[in-house]
Length: 215
Image (cartoon, rainbow, N blue to C red; front, side, top):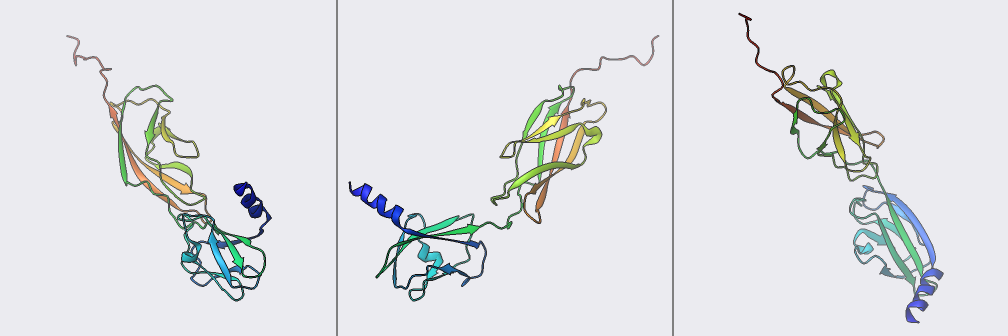
């Protein structure tokens, strides 16, 4: 019965929702609760204390940034502002994402071995780029070194990145491919980074000995 009662009170609370972009300068005005203070601030999210990152003016109810906010660390702050006189107000401050991270492969070069004459459509896993922004990595492309369009990339839109064999690999013709892969995010303007992928074509015993002369 006690829990039901408090759930009813939570539903009955007036609500205020504000948004502020991450990276906003310290002291940026987010909004006003609109009810005369002073207030008792009660965090609803126990992970982060809003009073560490936000300032609530005890006189006029204005909310300002106390720290430079980072959406990748905290997406929102939810708390109850309880005035001495009046109803409790649930306040939600949402942190808007900005494109402040560049896709990162974590390494400049990556090497894999693929046997020659491997069937077309064969896939090999590649290390994906990481980008914690909301508009993270959206596309990959091979911009250099894909001789004869022998390879393609397949990206599932989440994490998995595969190199797909398209053409016929022949070590006697070309024993190594050195390609540049670019990862691009969905921000405006977009950010990108690159990684050099080396494919070493492994030899198979597919060429029988041939005499230089018949006699």
